[in-house]
Length: 78
Image 1: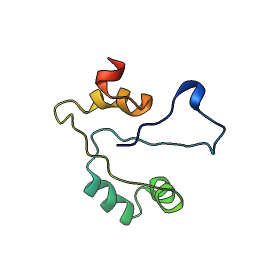
Image 2: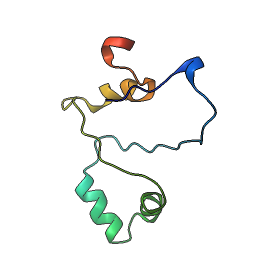
Image 3: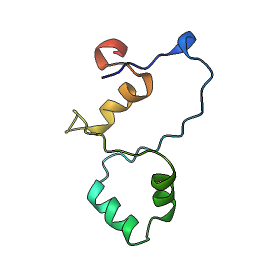
Image 4: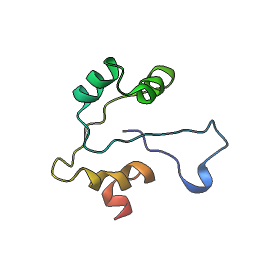
């Protein structure tokens, strides 16, 4: 896993907009996008980058969000 720079290490870069749909069923989202029922999400997918994130926290997916937005593991951020 690549560690993300934080704090004073960050340089001016292209802004990033991240959409995280916690606990979503990817196959259901894909089907709804294919049916035209999620046009905005479809547009974001077509014009940007997307991917499925496999979470190590099967019991409580919300536990990994601090890891995501800090770029650190739970051992590093507590």
